[in-house]
Structures are given as C-alpha cells and as structure tokens.
Amino acid sequence: MQPYLSRRLQLADLMRARGGGVAVLATAPEVIRNRDAHYPYRSDSYFHYLTGFPEPEAVVVIVAAPNTTRSLLFCRDKHEEREIWDGFRFGPAAAGDRFGFDEAHSIDRLDEQMTRLLADQPALFHPLSARPETDAAAQRWLAAVRAQARAGVGAPTAAFDLHALLDEMRLRKDAHEIDIMRRAANISAHAHVRAMQSTRPGVREYEIEAELLHEFHRNGSSFPAYGSIVAGGKNACVLHYRGNADTLRDGDLLLIDAGCELDGYASDITRTFPVNGRFSGPQRELYDIVLAAQAAAIEQTRPGQRFIDPHDAAVKVLTQGMIDCGLIEGSLDGALESGSYRRFYMHRTGHWLGMDVHDCGEYREPGESAAVGGEKPWRVLRPGMVLTVEPGLYVRAAADVPAAYHDIGIRIEDDAVVTDAGCEIITGDVPKSASEIEALMRSA
Image 1 (tube, helix red, strand yellow):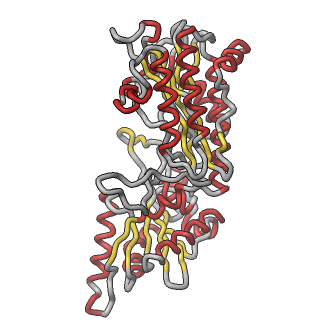
Image 2: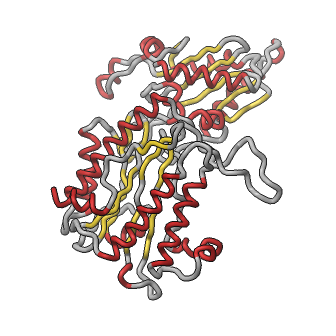
Image 3: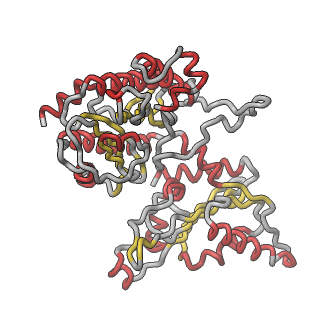
C-alpha cells in the first residue's frame, strides 16, 4: 500500500505546482476476445501505478487542495451471484481500507460524485484523448458542473494531460519497482536458459515458446510481457517475427526475444544461439561483433550520459564490424555519415522499460528548448531509469552479400538499471558469450 500512497501524494504535489485541482483516471476495460470469451484481464498501467488495485470497472480520483490531498476509489460493489461466476470482489469498503484511500464508493456513484468533486476546482487532470469514453465522461462531468453556474458554482477552467505528469514520475523507478523488475528479470533469465537446454534440430519454434511460458508460470508470472519471438534461421531477420511455427534446422541460429511480466512490470531479454549447440565460423564472427557492440553500449549506460550515447557506441562497433567482414564498404566515418550500416542494423539500441515493455517517458529533455532548426537534446540518464541494451545484425540473403552470412539474424538484449555508479544488468543470469552458450548446451 505504501508505494501507491506515496505516488498519489507525489502526483498531488505536481498538480499543486500547476494550481491544484482534481485528477481522475480509469483502469482498463475488460476486452472480449470472441463472442462471450474475454482476454485475461490486465489493469491500466497508470492506474496500477497509483493504486495497486487489480479489478476492472474502477476509477481513482485525487483532489489536490492547497494544503490537503484526498484520494478516492470508485469500484464495483460486492455481488454474491457475480462472485460465484467470476470470483472475489473487494467492494468499496474493503478496497478503501486495503489500498489506503480516504474514501471509497460504488462505481455507480461516479457521475454524481464527480459533479460534486469538480465544483469550484481550478483544473481537471485526466488522460487527454486516451480513450473516447474517458473524454466523453470528462465532458459530461464538466457540463453538469457548468449547469450549476446560476447557483454560484464554478467549473474548472483548465485541463491538463494526466499522463504527461505520470510519465515523468514513472520514468525513474523507486526501490519497490526495481525489486519487482529484478525478480521478473530473474524468472525470464531462467526461462531463456531452459529454452537453450531444450533446443535441438527438428524441434518446432512453438515448442521452445512453450518452454518459456512454462518457466514463466511456474515462477509466479501470469503473462509474458509481450508476444514472444522465437525465430529460427532467416526468421531472425524479421524484427517482430510472430509465426513461431517453423521447424528448427541443424546449422541455423535461433533468436529468442521473450520476457515475463511480474506484478505489472516487464522484463525483456534476447539471446541468439545455435540450434545444434555449435556456432559456425561466420555465425561466431557476426555474434562476437554484436556482443562487442553491446559491451560498448553498456559502458555508456551510466548517469550523465545521454540516452543516445549507448546507441552511438554500439553503432560504431557494429559498423566497423560490417566493414571488416565485407558487408559494407568504405571507411567508418563514411559509413556512419551515409547511414549505409542501416541495411543490416535498423533499430535503436534500447528503449525505456517498466510497467510497459516500451515504457512511457520522453526520450528527449522535455524542459529544454530545441536548437534553432534542430531538435531538443537527448535525455540525460539518471539513477532509477531502466532501459534495454539490444544491438543486433540482420543479414538477409542478397546477391551482393557474402553467402556465408546469408539469413543470419543476431540480437543480444539485456535490461539495465541506471545506478549512481553506472548501471546494473539485471538479466545477467543468461549466458551471453559464445563459449558459455556452447558449454550450457553441451551440458543439457
């Protein structure tokens, strides 16, 4: 309860810095998969960040007055029949006590209470244009307050995007969040080890995916953080490959990009390894280039560096490697300037990680002005930020590409927590060097 209460108080302080008012945030709706079957329910990340409350049909309201803060929860009532069919519900009384709210009410009273709560408030804070139904609700509440004008009741005259405030809060993780992310990373690391030990020629990609999911679930994770990528051979050159159905072939590499979600927080790991347990010469050559690029990027992942610095460090190593093995021609400076390396490396080296696998937060400094004719500077890395470090090489077969490298796709990805001294790699329990991978697969 304490981390969520602290976040609501912190949000109220940010609201007061803008004159105060009322913030309102709904959780995610339940979603039908087909006919009357639902997708597994997951709370809205912003809502979970502020409340920890796991049920659908819920709204949190925070009132930031000049000297006081009140937080209110609106949720489903207790309902014996529905609990027989669908499971336990907290109900307002128990939920208010369990999750530390000043008030808790039935969700059926939301419209009535919002009209009262918004009266004579300077501003409404809500997610602008996030979902049509939440925008419509805000307009309905404001109209109801304005209808009381002749009675001397004032309506909010300003609206602020609540997500923008929460994005800044979520970008730097607290100790509670980092502890959960370490545990998620550990579960995912063991899943990748299990996948390596289960891989052999003739196995289907989905069989290896099943090994990952088994390890996630047996260690307390309810979901993958995203759709797992299990890509053998040329499929590894498809960045967001989703088929996961081909047969793994002797002599190919297998790229696995997979991570579990734990208590609302994501992990994100990629490893690439030989299906038969032994790297070929060309595979090892490209693999070692990517591994060196990741090491260079990790070295730049520390406080005071810009978000772009790990990427730039990785690109230099990758580009020189491409030149050395004949994938591209020319000098390093020339290839960097022309961007010719992008044929084989076309994505950024990392992204923010947190409650969402591609987590919220600006990548450029929000408070700084852009240079004339240019862009805002990249974000400075600070302790508590969490990001991935994931260089790769993707060599599709082509007439002008040396045949030895055809259809080799490699990515190596770890999760890094920026610390006071540098960064902590929380996914380091998965073997990463070629020799370590081969030794693990021999021992299976």
